[in-house]
Every structure is written in C-alpha cells, then in structure tokens.
Length: 106
Image (cartoon, rainbow, N blue to C red):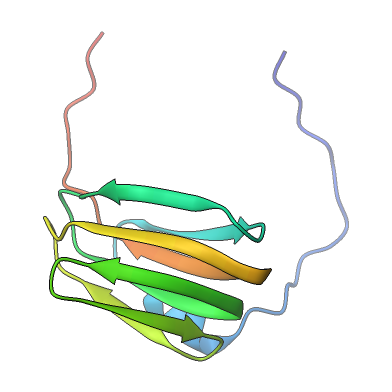
C-alpha cells in the first residue's frame, strides 16, 4: 500500500558537484557496493557519469583498467562494455544518466 509520511525536514545538504551532474531531464543514483561486489561486464544505451564519493573500485572497460577512488569521475559513453569491483572497504558513488524518453504503454 502506498503511504505518504509527512515530514518536517525541507533542506538537505548535497555537494554542488553532485547537483551539477543532474541533467535537465533524468536522474542521479547513489550506489553503495560492499567490498567484493562485482558488476559483471555490461553496457548501457545511454551515456553515464560516475563520481566516486567514498572508497575504491577496480574499473575495467574494453580499452583499459584502472583503480578509481574518491574524487575521481568516470565519463562512460553509451555502449561501452565495462565492469567494476568494489575493493576493500567498499565504494559509494553517484551515477548520472539521461535516458531516452519512452512512451508509456497502457
């Protein structure tokens, strides 16, 4: 059952760099991966921007591999085959995408 819970908190502290990732139409996702979590090779039909907030990831794509850590940003073009693994201590990162509009079916 859908519920709406009234709240009193109306202001949240969000790093301006994260707000800058928010597209005109689209979303940002906050991802938390425990150490050892693997996102096996996959692609996306849209461009992605990943901003590492905390921890480290071993990030692999068709043309390379790199350990990324807090403060690093990954610009990932649509269709790029990639994989990541959270290293010791895990990782927290923001993923920004702007998906193409799709009509809703009834």
